[in-house]
Image (cartoon, rainbow, N blue to C red; front, side, top):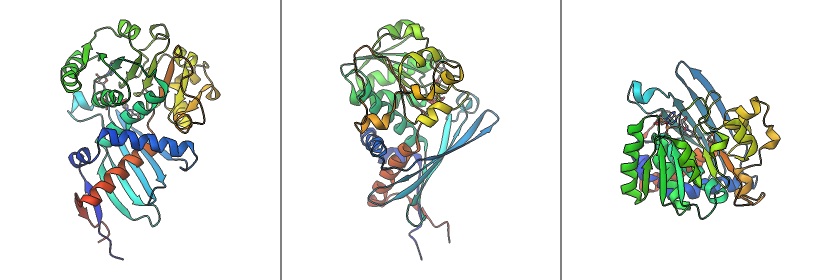
Length: 331
Ligand SMILES: NC(=O)c1ccc[n+]([C@@H]2O[C@H](COP(=O)([O-])OP(=O)(O)OC[C@H]3O[C@@H](n4cnc5c(N)ncnc54)[C@H](O)[C@@H]3O)[C@@H](O)[C@H]2O)c1
């Protein structure tokens, strides 16, 4: 049977086709479907390389039409300084879920950024105090701007503290985002005092040792712990993980590659101590925040269903608009 060929979409095309608000809605819906038991378990595979590695996250997405989606991302944290390339690069393959036909190949950079930020926003919507007006962001790389834009979509933020080991990165972030979002953004040299005033805290660094200490975090804080998405990465004090209410994007992944896994390895937590998966809260099966004093950590490791819904949204828009090039791999 002759097909139309596979749609090829480069980063700039993906960027134009997927807005952050659309991505937040799609990711929330994905978590709801998962919480309602409508999505089968995803597949994940990781391979280490000197200085980095590759992971594959794959999911079946029941939709108007069923899709099979696999994201293949490489992650090389020294890229930015060593070779002026992004830390994360990769591709997404989107196939027909009924006959396996390869429908599209998309650059993954923009989808990874937006779907990760969208997951933090969905978590913040259910787990942060709704009147949160202050936030701190640690790590001003690729993730940070989307994280802040996404949080602004769900919370009435006014004042933001930003910190990065690379002070210029924090300064540039503050200048760019304060103009764009009309917020007061203050680069800080010490995270501790900023945390005393922050209702929301996003960690999106490539750190391999925790830098957030339990004593520094005040009651009521919502933390989106985004950076630790592999066994060697860590951002949050295991003692803080053990004392906080922990919500995982995926229980299995958080307990094997997220900040939760370090607390478990130290004997401070058990898998059963994780309060919930985000999907259970979005689907209304478990309560989110139950008091203004709770410290809640969203342990974000990145789940395949987030990539799947974002890639499908891009593909369906592109197909309707007849944009992108087509390539017949099977010719
Ligand atoms: N949870 C998820 O779904 C998900 C998705 C995408 C990326 N990530 C992870 O998030 C992290 C950030 O990704 P990115 O693409 O923004 O990376 P990036 O390399 O573009 O930015 C990382 C920033 O963190 C800073 N940094 C590193 N260690 C720090 C420390 N101890 N304190 C303060 N700043 C520090 C760096 O200077 C850099 O500016 C990576 O570890 C990445 O793997 C997670």
